[in-house]
Length: 204
Length: 249
Image (cartoon, rainbow over all chains, first blue to last red; front, side, top):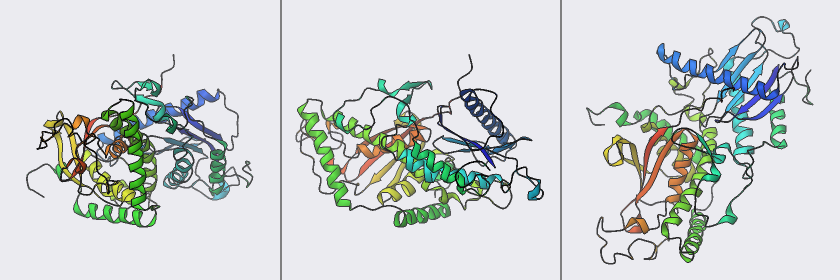
């Protein structure tokens, strides 16, 4: 069973949130929860980066943080080279028979499989729908990063404007992922054998 | 392979390069939508011609055209980085260091380059191959290049630069109008020469920025200026660290 999906950009903004089946309502506000999840992933990544170089087995310069598990859920984190982060919260994978599981859906598979599914979400939905969408204004286009690592709105960038009519999407609002993307995410989630969703996208 | 130089100067091992080249060929042959090269050359040519006309009539100067082309390329590069990352993950599937654990079901994950030399190889052997169908040579690679402020740098050299067939620059755009007759090496004034590959240089800059590398790109040589080759110089400024979440206050 999958619980929630978060997509973050490299500037810590939550671009997309989707709840599939949440057994209990959250005890905090949505914005707080999104920030908390990013904070945890960020810290875990920093920790894994330092520790894996300490034990000398780091094959990944970023430390390769992939997932952690509590008694209630498992958090999977997939970061693209362009620093988008996809976080999926699922039920705890069961090691014994499938009947141990609280839900009727098949057990959540190994981490590698879930990360591969998240990669497909990135390659098959996010890139075609968002990155290749000329009307979507990407986070990297809304900001430039100054040399002291502060973010500056791109409107302060000075460029000679020779062909103003060729500029797409001039609105200054940050990227909002449209309903088409939402439908694609639901379709993706339905395709997961362990999603625990009915074909209509409702929780079982 | 010359003995004695540090390994990172040598680039990737030959077997990895062969594998990358084969995979890039595969991507180019089977999963890249093709368009007639002449059509692209003509389209790009009319874009540049339009920019040039507007810039010169408004008195903005040749440098403004280069800046504008670079800016367009930069915006393309920002998005192209994701397209590249999402399509090339299979390249890394068979390299042992790129596997993630979790038992036998190892999968490939998208991964950053280990060093700038690898970045150069990937740009030349994979990126140019899969988008333009050719691989420029990497020359003059240095981890600390004195001419570029002791920073890592490399050059991409094109014998037949993309988009440049059928193109001739008029004297007012090729930097020779000011110093007529003095066209020997170093005698040309490149400040007021239209750099036809500015857009590609911008694409490289934008794509590397999206991947967390801030670079400076320049086009020191161009066949349209009478040089024997076109060159794009890429200089690494710094790696952009991941930004920390804002603290609660």
